[in-house]
Amino acid sequence: MAHASERGAGPITFERVYDASIEDVWALWTTKEGLEAWFAPEGMRVEITALHLRVGGAFDYVMSAVGAEQIAYLGNLDMRQTARVSGQFVEMVRHRRLRIRFDMDFVPGVEPYPYDMLVEMSVEAGRVRMVLTADRHPDPEITSGAILGLTSQLHSFDLAISARAKKERQKQ
Image (tube, rainbow, N blue to C red):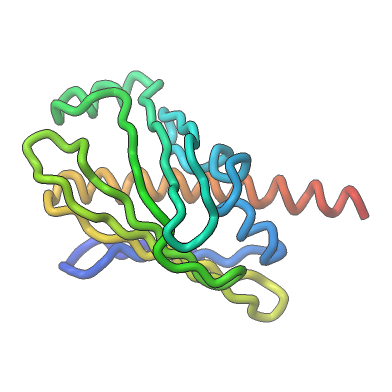
């Protein structure tokens, strides 16, 4: 099941169910290799520069536009093609819950603000249910872009988790 809330004042929510292990889903959220496999939307590249997996630990990355459409979109918003994003893990329950707070300090004309992403995972009937909840941005245009970006990122997540599951099956 795929769902994304798009309207209203509340947070943005996405839900997925995977035929995969909870360990694989967790690893895609908590390892440099895992995050770099999917955390960038289409037309973007991500490089994880710090990943200290503990409450209060850093989660920093560089996101760069590499596709013509993404470069043009950012240009229309007067945003740089590359952004350094700093965050930290504020909540962590292994294989269950992960909250990351990012410092959004790269949006032109907007005072820096915190931006939270919460991922919740559970095993149900042998499958992993993952719910991603993300804050809305103060600017509706940035929120619309975030929804498109997260949708693209989660498509890449779907591909990455399928590849991991296939690799695991081949080992058996």
